[in-house]
Length: 122
Image (cartoon, rainbow, N blue to C red; front, side, top):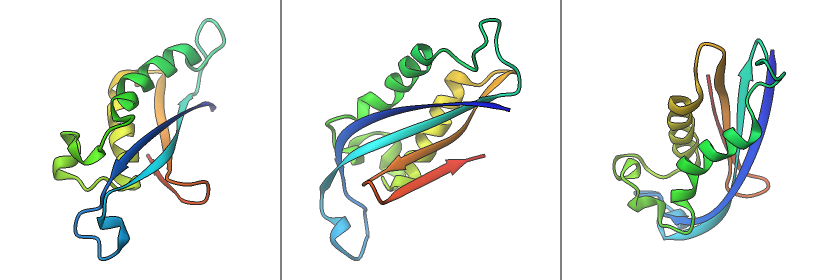
């Protein structure tokens, strides 16, 4: 199995609804989002996926969250904007763009801080 990893950073705010602590207040993070894509076979160029293509697809999904209040995004109207839900949202949306019979998103890691992260994988 081959796997490639691409990372993007954004800054945005959120608040965790009904949290019984400080996270219920609006606050911000410099999020780091790491995406893993796997394939059993490489393409004709010897790649899982071109990093430029992966970056562009990630940007389409992730950059609309940059410098925003994540709570205002339509997906997070019904889903609390936790790191876990953010990882699942990115995983699901990117899978729609990337997955085919050869390639698939295997994992998304969302770092709230250098020491706190959430992972969604299959």
